[in-house]
Image: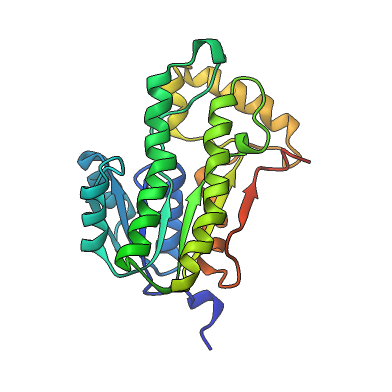
Length: 249
C-alpha cells in the first residue's frame, strides 16, 4: 500500500493557468509532494518565468484554451497524464452591472467556462488522463454568494459548478474523477487589473479579513491545499470544495 505522503510521487500533472496566482500555487505544492508538473499558459514569457521559479520536476507549454483544435492537440502531445488542474483566468468581472464591458465578460466566459468544456471534451475523446486520474476545475464563491458587483461573475462561476457535476458523470466511464475548487477572496496578481493601487488593495484585503472567521485573506499557498485534496482523494468526484475562510458561515 502506497504511503499517503508518497501518493503523488512521480505523478504527471498538467496545470493549465499554472504560471501565476492560484494555479502557480497549486503547481508549486504538487512539486513539493513529488509530482512532475507541466504548466500551460497562452504567454510564452510567463511559461518560461514560471518554469524557472518552479525549478526541478517542472516543464512548460504554450496554449490558449479558446482555440479548441490547437489546445486539444497540445493536450494530446502531453498525454497520457495522471491529473489535470484548470485554473486559467486572465480577467476579473467586477463592478456595477450597468457599466459591464460585455466583450470582457465574453472573453472570460471563453476562457473559464468554455475552456473547461474544451478540456473535458478532449479528456473524454482522446484519453488524455489515465484511468483513475482526475480533472480539477476552478470556480469562485461569487457562484454561491455573488453580492452587488458580482452578478455576471457569479453566473460564470455558477456555470462551472453545474459543469462539474456533468463532467463527473461523463468521465466516470473512464474512471476519471472531476471536482472543483471554490475559493473565496485570494490575494493574486489579478487584482492589479482592476486599476486599484497596492495601498487600495491592502486596505480592501484588511477590511475583508476583519469579517472572516479565520482573520486573514488567503494567498495561493493557502488555496493549494484544496487542489492537493482533489488530486489525492480517490473517493471524491462531482464535489465542490469550498475554501473561503468562513465567508459563508
